[in-house]
Length: 258
Image (cartoon, rainbow, N blue to C red; front, side, top):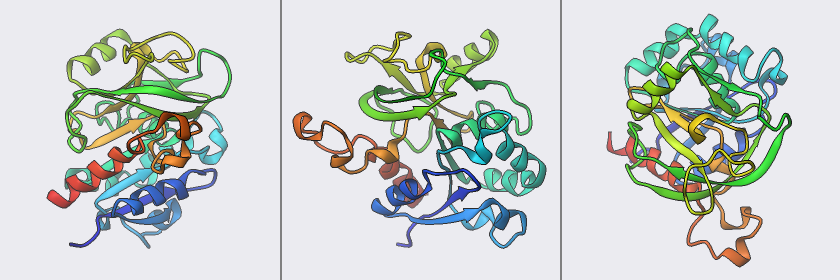
């Protein structure tokens, strides 16, 4: 069977694209780095891929706000092309800065392209956070992650990761089962306590999907734990498998089965 094709979207300031491409390749995908200008010039098109992956980093230096300029670029120049891709069943995953882009573009949480209904605000600590956290996967609408509750350890690296929205929006996100990941304490209980919740995110939200279940955004970096030796305590903890691997295994498995 042909390998699922993954568009790893890059622009000035993205810096986790190679790790993301490596993760998809490791589990059987064909990852191709595509600069946003190639899409604007129509040298490459979203419709030629099954998965669109927005990596972490600091797109355009996070000027104005994290992910804002790339989000505006998607809305202003690529809205029709991206809308067609989504309507035809294309999958999207945004990690860290990629999640910020999806939220600021309005694709998350409700796929209201061009209308921002939530935000990822500055961490409560007031500074950049770089640490490993416990994250629990939730039973959610996400189509390509299997419905289960699992506790994993993943790395986070961000200054603006606090998921925030008005109470009505938060209630809709929860009621619609859009929360895919939550920060937890060591016992797997969602927490608002720092540093287990590294940014103060409402309801300990670490990642969400849209109403279709085809668009996923998360602040933790699964691509940074797809080899056992990537964890700083891999010798002592004796992990059975890298905790980030399931994200890539399952999204690729979903595409192969579609």
